Length: 246
Picture 1 (cartoon, helix red, strand yellow):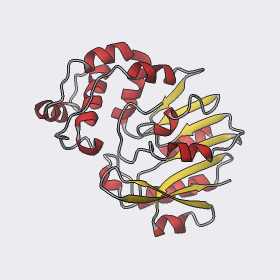
Picture 2: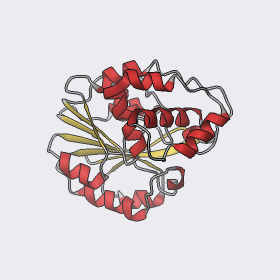
Picture 3: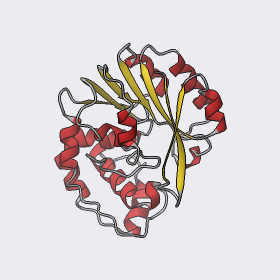
């Protein structure tokens, strides 16, 4: 199934390629930088324990509301239309106090859906289907088996908590020199902190990055695979790297 929301750097076009590289013996699957969850949703079940994590609190709140309050969230979203005035009003109000988690999740959902390139900053000026009907399927996926654990933690702490010999971490951090597209700060020290953390884990990792000399040097001791996809921010082909420790 597809993700319910567009996301900058989303992996919808590379999800199957990434999944094809997953090891067979995995008892826990952890998405460290979950984003729109394209890889998570591309398969019915990745492991007995599945974890979705993201640093964006609004996004995590949306996932939690879909899992636990889907009907109420659908009703709230249904009150919105795709219009510039609606987008600008949401932008002004979403971080104010006084809203319930469901109200905030609905605003965030609509804001991302109708913004340009899912950036949440500028109105998209085109027709977008903001129907919340598909959220019923997403709720079922998030509740499959034991259900997906939804976390909102720093990546290093998350990795240390869930690391086991048969754990698989999929990491899709903000790309080097593309961090300004995201609302969460991520700088060179964070890229290097992630690198140090992944070097010490007991489990396995698959890491997505842009094809960048800095990243190639940082991960030169690991298996680096070159791939490409269509760029969802501009026309043309975008070169990427898939890095793994197995």
